[in-house]
Amino acid sequence: MQRIDVFNGDADGICALHQLRLNNPLPDALLVTGVKRDIGLLARLEDVRNSDITVLDISLDHNRAALTSLLERGNKILYIDHHFSGPTPLSPHFEAHIDPQPQTCTSIIVDTLLHGQWRSWAIIGAFGDNLDESALRLADSLSLDPEKTAMLKEMGILLNYNGYGAGLDDLFYHPADLYRQVSAYADPLTMYERSPALRILKQGYEEDMERAMREAPVRDSPGGRIFRLPAEPWARRVAGVFSNTLARQQPEKAHALIVLNSDGTLRISVRAPLSNRTGADTLCRRFPSGGGRAAAAGINNLPADQADAFMQAFTEHF
Image (cartoon, rainbow, N blue to C red):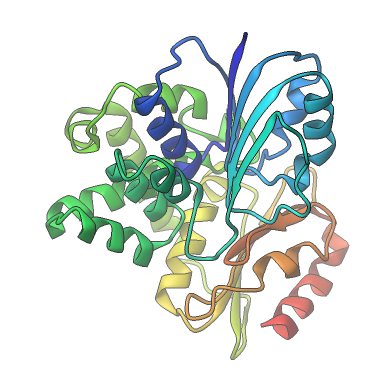
């Protein structure tokens, strides 16, 4: 039976898979992943039959048709996620662990399933998803000192930073290659000390964030701020971590980041207020190609002529 691991290319997806494979190694598994916004990953498996498939950190709702087809072709599927799912299939070959609560992520769900066996990696995934409070609670459970916790947070930010881009050419590493580098380490602090990939990502992150932090909001209302970045690779790479940083700056406000795609459409990242992590997904699903979770969501390809409509909807929504 073929083994296939399908996972989001951000810190949460990578760390969720790493925990599972530390617990149950499958060195010959086929890896299916992409940039963070490439969430229709199950469509790539249209010819797969009678295989064992693990799916991590991508919305079931966005993959429903492909998932149904895979189950009809005799595949066994384990699905772990924290995004909006809608109804889940009823099949003896389908096992789901889906929790859309705003303070959890896929890495934390896996940590629970594995009874905390590889918890340091769940902490990294949670920090990457801007769930600092959840990550700190897990760090406290391990009695980690502030210095080690800070290292795990930096790793989460850097692994997440690599996942953002309009395409793989924007990234420093293909997410599958970055996962393979992560998978060489059982102890994340050893990776922190030795990994050349982390050093490269840190340099890129610092340079991109320096550019982004010079930007002023294009709209600032009592409920939220909206920023806009140019159609440049650095802007696409930094979109997620910049959005998270903005949210931490003013936790009582929602934040939106608009980046121009090369085809003239708009890529939008939305963060609900950290003081009330709800509403980002419902707002984004009102627009074409929108989706995500309650605390953080986005729109992949918003027609440019809908920019004003989105900004108005964002202001009213929050």
